[in-house]
Amino acid sequence: MSSSPPSEAVSGRRTTPPQWVAVGVLTLATFVVVTSEMLPVGVLTPMADGLSIPPGAAGASLTITGLVSAVTAPVVPRLLGDLDRRAVLAAAMVVLAVGNGLTAVSEGFGTLVVSRVVLGIGMGTVWGMAAAVATRLVAPRDVALAVSFAVSGVASASVLGVPLGTLVGNAFGWRAAFGSLAVLALAVALALALTLPGLRRPEPTGHGDGGGRHRSLARPAVVTGLVVVVLLVTAHFAAYTYVRPALEELPRMSANTVALLLLLYGVFGLVGNFAAGAVAGRRPRPTVLLLAAGIGLAVAVLAGFGTLAPAAGAAIALWGLAYGGLSVGAQLWMTGAAPDRVEHVTGLYVGVFTASIALGAFLGGVVVEGAGIVPLLWSAAALAAASLLVGIFGPGPHRRPPASD
Image (cartoon, rainbow, N blue to C red; front, side, top):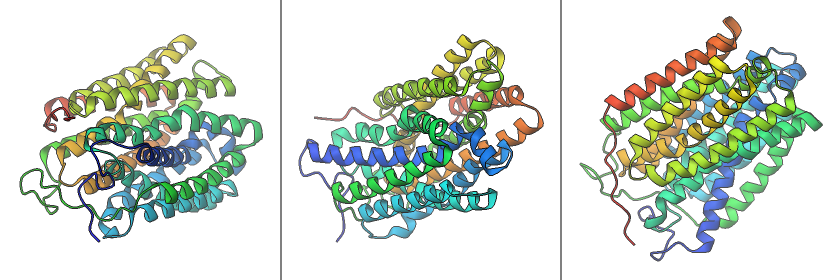
C-alpha cells in the first residue's frame, strides 16, 4: 500500500493528542540515541582508566560511532523501499540497546570498537529518519514544531542524558551508565511499536523544479548548508569531546562540578533548540549563521579566559544555547532546500552531520594529544568562523511562507 505526502497519519487539519504522543516517543528515541553517542564525553576519564587506554583513544569511540552512522543514515532511506518505518525504527532501537550493552561489558579497545560499530548502525537509522517521520505524524501547520520536538532529543540528551549519565558513572561506575541506556533503548523500542502509525514509503510532493523524487540533491542551497554543517559540527565536536579535560585543566573544576556545568550547557541547549525552531522554519539561513557566530564566540572565550571559572561558565552557557539550536536549524535549512525529497535529504544531512562528529572527535584527539587543550579550542573557533563565512556568501534555502490555519 502506498502512502500519502508528509501528513498521511493525520486525518484532519489539527494534530490530535495521540499524534503528539507519537512525536514525543520519537523525541525520546533521538534523546536515547544521542545520549548513547555522547556519553563517553561525560565519563571519558574513568572510561579510559577502566579500559586501560589513553583519553584520546576513548574519545575516538565517538569517531567510530560517527563514521558508521555517517554511512548508515543516507543509505537506509534508499534501502527501505515500502517497509513500515515504525518497524524499522523499533528494530533500530533494539540494535542501539545491543550496542550499549556491549559497551558496558567491554574489556579493551577492541571490544569497545565492536560495540560502537553496532551502536552507530542503530543511531544512524533512528536519527536519519526521525525528522522525516515527524513531519508525517502531524497536521501541515505543525510540521516545524514537530521537527523541533523530534530534534529536541539532541539537546535534551545534553540537558539530561549526558549529565545524568555522568552522575551515574561517578556514583556507580561508567559501565552502569551504559547498561542503563541499554534498558532504556529497549523500552523506547516497545513504545515506538505501540504509538507510531504504520508508515510506508512517502509519495513525492511535487515541490521544486522537476517535482519528482528523482531530482538531484546536488542543489546550491543544499551544498552550502552541508559545507556549513561540516565545518561547524567538526569545530564543535573537536572541542566538545574534550570539554571535561578542558574544564578540569583550565578552571580546575571537580568531576561533580563538571557534571553540573554540562547540565547548564544542556539547559541552555534546550532553550536554543526551541528558540531556533521557532524562527528557522521561515528564516533558516540567518538562524544558522547566528548559531555559528555563537559557537565560535563561546569556544574563543573558553580558550582565552577559561582559567576564570565565571568566564568558563558563561562560555559553556553560550555554547549550549548556540549549539542547541543547530540541529533543528540545519534540519529546516535542508528540508527548505529540498522539500520534494525530505526523507532522502534528511538521511544525507544526518550522514554528513555524523561524519563531521567523527571528523571532529578524531581531529580533536590529534590536536589535544599533540598540542594541548588551548590550541584545540582556538582551532575549533577558527573552524566555526570559516563556517560563518561560507553561510554568509553561499546560497541558502528560500524563506517559507507562514503556515495557514
